[in-house]
Image (cartoon, rainbow, N blue to C red; front, side, top):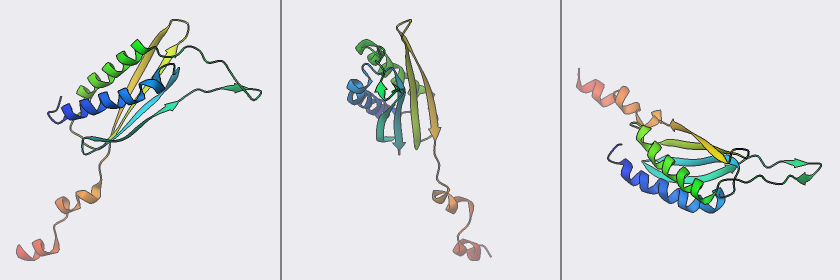
Length: 134
């Protein structure tokens, strides 16, 4: 894990503490964490599915338990070891609960973002530099 990731680890732990109530009993969804300069900028949960039939909501199957939410949080923190050399981007944790087996699964997606506007001076010399070299 990168040295600067320890602070991000604490931030991801904070995110999951904040979302604990929302994740408990959720059957499926995605936890989104937006990162800028190795700091969490915003976070949230996309819940799915919320289904209805004939205009009435279906009864919700049993979702994540408190213990499963804690295990989810630990998995999310441990997954930061796989983040390599980027400071801006998103982390998406997709999760679902299997009602029949009372188990859950999750997948992790890392998305790094780069902005070329910040790098233009590295690749294109400034006009003054061109004149100084002649």
